[in-house]
Image (cartoon, rainbow, N blue to C red; front, side, top):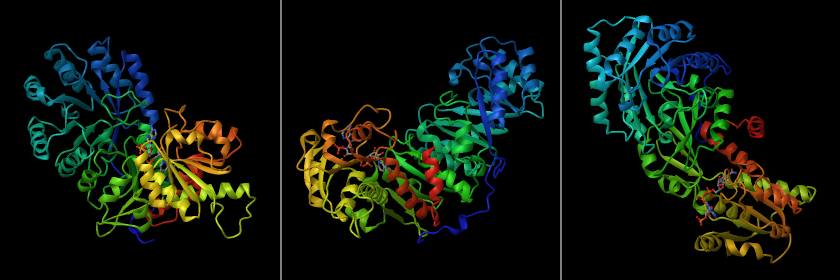
Length: 528
Ligand code: NAP
């Protein structure tokens, strides 16, 4: 392949137990009672955490002397004790003296780490009078729930945390944009002391997953989805099994899917499982992006090697590319962007390949595979719903195969524009139900109508579906949408979006890695 990344293929042993970095996974434990906390510790160990953060401020009934001793004694993992006050986002609302006494007690009883907030650190140091048990590491932390400051301010923050006697520096900021994370990486990678640097919120996910690459001391992984101690924390399961956290290294190449929304995307599962199985040193992330040009301008190093692009960024991404392949240029949208070794961004469109071949296969099934050399799409009336990236790809691809094209779109002007481009007819969405110039048409939905969670929506009435011999839906969550279910009930052949997804993913995988896609594995993953 043109963009082969031979050097990235390492002999990584797949399977449990392989670990290529020292970054710890810390499970934040929050419960009302000490007994529940003990249960959570055991669960954390079984899920694969390396350390637990015991959030004392969440305990409703708490006797420091007996409970801390018990918690340390029974904990199967190293401990971090945190007694977070309300003024720093926690639940403790008592006086500082009692809080300091409790943290001091935890240190004396054998805690491996304690966390003290920067705002209280000097007072706490005075309280300790230098009597700090040697074994216990002090994490001095700062939390900013509003924003991520400029890099100079973050540098000054780290210096003040170090000056406050931190063995380990911790700061957490809020991500207003995914590019905020780059400033935090810049600080983490240059830190002379162990550092925990997190960017909260879905836009900050990269900071939590990539910390082994950028030298982080630990990341937080929750026991269950949604049970977080700060916004945006992934589960331990996601870190270990979805993002292959244990295998990440400083030279791991970063890939991902740019979209908004994007958390539903199955692509990270597909690519990361494949990377792991063949020993490719890469990681593929969900990238919640608001501003595409800003994203590419910020993440411009060779570490950020390739991207899938999804709704609504395919057209904006094309404008950011230094080179665009001719097919993508005609479609006006890219769904795949590769950073070449010379740093240039090259865009292409793999959407139509998977969809068109899946539709052709479906039609061949109807014709018992006997169409000679010509495409079974030739001469058919192909109705595309939608005029965005996927709509353009399908219309262009079907046109290439000799189909006649009609485009129906919510925004009629966009339907008109695309129809003019491919020499077809334009319709409004409202006209679709009564549109029947002939029987035996092909219908392709390329809008997000019917996508999870709005699974009861459909772009066209069931009655109108009787006019179609084959119906394709680009939506793949759920696999069988209402549109496909009703089409099958009306007697049409149906082609699910997952077939398009797998087809475009084969192409992208080969461009990302330079190696052939493990096709059977892709199919198996998507079936599951
Ligand atoms: P896009 O470029 O943003 O285009 C979205 C299209 O959907 C536009 O035509 C838009 O109409 C229409 N639309 C959006 N919401 C609508 C609504 N509520 N009612 C009516 N029309 C609506 O997005 P895209 O990249 O083409 O993706 C579109 C869909 O295809 C997504 O669901 C995506 O997940 C799916 N897809 C699947 C695969 C696969 O492999 N299976 C690959 C690519 C895309 P307006 O012009 O009026 O805004």
